[in-house]
Image (cartoon, rainbow, N blue to C red):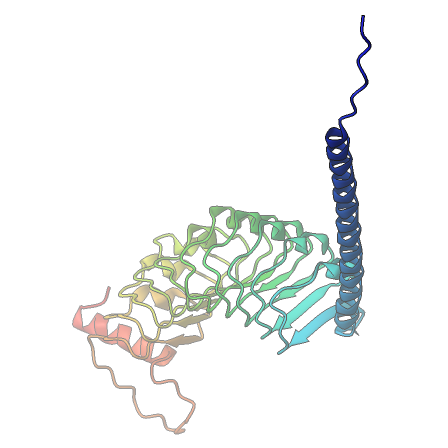
Length: 325
């Protein structure tokens, strides 16, 4: 047998070496990129921490102690969103944030269970988060002059709520039926919106005393409006109301009734049953009868020409002519 000489494939060794060195280089580059990424992330985290601290410091400058109540007050500064670091001041009892361009109530509002007053009037808020229902101590919710169109049913769990102002949002047209359970609500302002009728939730609110539904699209009032027995002030100006139900005469606590700028063609006799009524206004209605009040001997400049005296004179004239409702 003849021994064959060993053959070394130099080309194969060179290829393997190049491949190995390429992998090592690629691995080193990946390690470098990862280190750089971590470095950037670390710098970003440090930057975010410092930014959060700066924001918190700014917010703390706007916290005031008035009569033992901690109030966050921001006026006419740009705060389109509220930073999460605000949760580090959970003991706040009032937010007064006006004209800041705020676009949303943060969902972390749920952490502020000590809030008594939430006043975010004159901003650009479009939505009330469901988390608002966590504020069981809240007494006043003031959201006038915003862009809200829908009210969450969860608001009904704000069991301490006494005052709710949703005026001048322009697009609210109804309220969830669950809001009838707001047993302590006494003041409700829904003026300058799109209500075509008084919501059932409002009629069934057990403690309501003051209601403003002016500048909506109301055409009539519910037949059982006398269910609102605690209401003493009813503002219905600038609507399309053409008549009143006789049941309004059973609202025994009603003292103020404003119906100016409507479509009233007559005044029902049932209003004379309201023994506590002391202020009414029927100005700018297309009333069918022309009633002139007798000249006042005292020449009282404060005399209300379309007020209580006018109402009684109109009803008497209607009765005389046999046209009374």
